[in-house]
Length: 107
Image 1 (tube, rainbow, N blue to C red):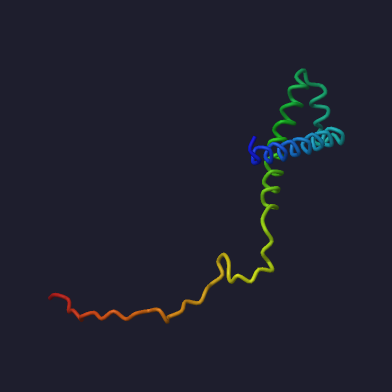
Image 2: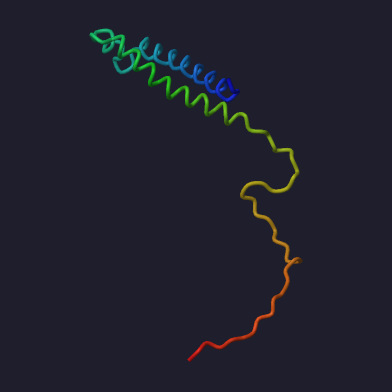
């Protein structure tokens, strides 16, 4: 299996684990009366699985995105010149004048 798939699966599973903790805490503290709504429903298991899965998708995506962004190299000590949108000075030494004939517009 390619490393990129291993990377994605690992961080998506971490996100689903965090989502499980998050859903557990929401139910434990009865936020928005969720514990009562789920525990008294006749489809409680399905509601819990869907709630966890949808939160898992969000948390898994965020976890993967954060992991990708943290992979960036720190280039703060490099002195290779400007990067990104840093304005650069344009040197006029290499410009060559091109002669043109003056033309008058037709009347």
